Image (cartoon, rainbow, N blue to C red; front, top):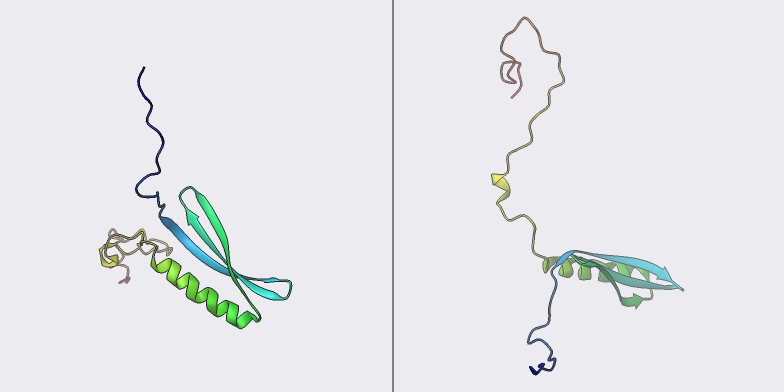
Length: 110
């Protein structure tokens, strides 16, 4: 009979990439609490990060924490924004049936 190897922990733990991160400030029993919500592919995780005695300090801490958390998230745009084509202009003016060419430049659009 073959011997079954014993279980051993992986050399590197599995780390899932975050898709977004949001910090929010909540009033709990007279203290202002900062929560960080991180959205992963497998679901969302919410953690209590700290509590502060006034709202201003809590909002400042939340802004710093959220900015640093988002900095570590890879951007979804992998191309240069100049490569994207601009949206087409929709013209709702009626087309004059007398003219045969109705391109936007012929109609006075730029």
